[in-house]
Image (cartoon, rainbow, N blue to C red; front, side, top):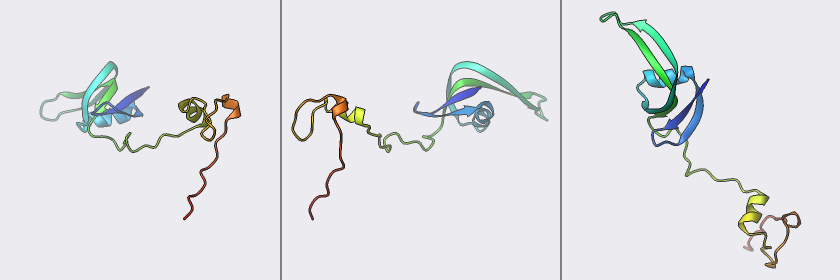
Amino acid sequence: MKVLKLSGQGLPQSWISLEEAVLHYAAGQVRWEMGSEVAVFHGGHNALTGLQSVITVNSIIGTQGFGGANPFGATPSITNPKLFARDRNLCAYCGDHFQELDLTRAKAAPMPG
């Protein structure tokens, strides 16, 4: 069973194990939770109160901070089908319309210096 870990802002970070999720709960890093309860972990007993610690894990947790993933710093990959669809299958040189199978792309020539 995996838990979906999101940043506090709701951006997906990763799928984590139940044990990793418990560590986030125990460290006080879970800001909010959604979904259903997927597991309950029972810990030790408090020496003063005698109460047993219990952590209930939900299927989706929002944790503090951004988690190192910066969606604005990522460079999206460009594939030929994406590029041709963006350009509506028009040739960049002559402006004519072609079928995707007839289109290619070449590396840009260096600018004269």
